[in-house]
Image (tube, rainbow, N blue to C red; front, side, top):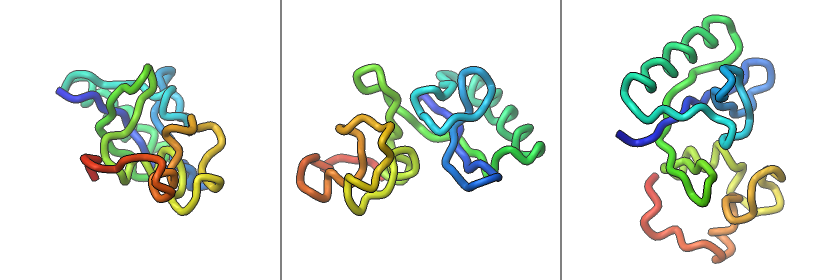
Length: 118
C-alpha cells in the first residue's frame, strides 16, 4: 500500500491542514500522521470524520504521499498546490516550505515536471 495522510481545510479560516501525528491539525505536511496500511488509513479517516463532526475541519480526505529526503511530498500535483502554495510565482508560495518543493519554480523552468502525477 502507498503511504497516505489526511488533508482538509480548517473551518475557521479555510487554511489547508493535515491530521498531525499528535491527533491535532497542522498546516505543515511534514508533521502529518502517515498511514502505511489499510487499517491505519481507516483509522485516520475515522479521526478525520470525528474532527469534521466537531467542526474543526471541512471535507477531510486521504491523499497519497511519498518521502523525499526525509520530507513528505504529495504525489498528485493538485495536492502539492494545496500543501505548498500557489503556482503563479515562487515568491507567493508559503515561506515555511523548502525551496525545492515550492510551487511556481516549475513555471520558471527550474524544475522538470515530466512524469508528475496529477
